[in-house]
Image (tube, each protein chain N blue to C red):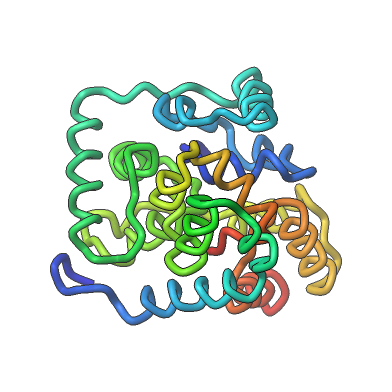
Length: 78
Length: 179
């Protein structure tokens, strides 16, 4: 691990596994019923895991967005 | 043992019925003022109030910490990780490095930093899984077998909406019972 040497494969795997888990558990019916921009922000969160940018896209504070993600059954994953 | 918690960690633990173990595992839990400022939900604010009344402490960074944290935010955004971090997590990582505090986070971007940046490789970043493991190891939570440990993890996942990767859960099952 050296600075500037890129992202290690183990970290890439960690992000990919987390994405698969979010996709698996997400309640797509709930997500698809949401108005814009909430629907797109939740979908963005499922695909990237970037909770901070997703909250901004939804126009919500981070904790409010995570509560909404909880209702949409999108887990935080580590 | 002292720790510093970021916003997403606090949100997750505010939903957990056994959140008292946090205060048994750690002597002090610092909450950066930046994390506090972005908490708006009533239930999360209530959780933080209770924590601050007991073992929680507000952490107000010194200017040098702000500068280093801003540099870290910039550096992480340049990595192309796909997940960015902001000041609350960044301050936690910087303070973790400077003062040896355990960083508590459930933001995968922050979890990844010690694996990516050499200057942060010694920072201890703990997720909820490490706290539950530590509580079991110290018998704060008494678990008789791997199956009760897995039940405990599932209970956490159901209550908080958080998921652990199975490989990570199995790693800690082995640590607790294969020695």
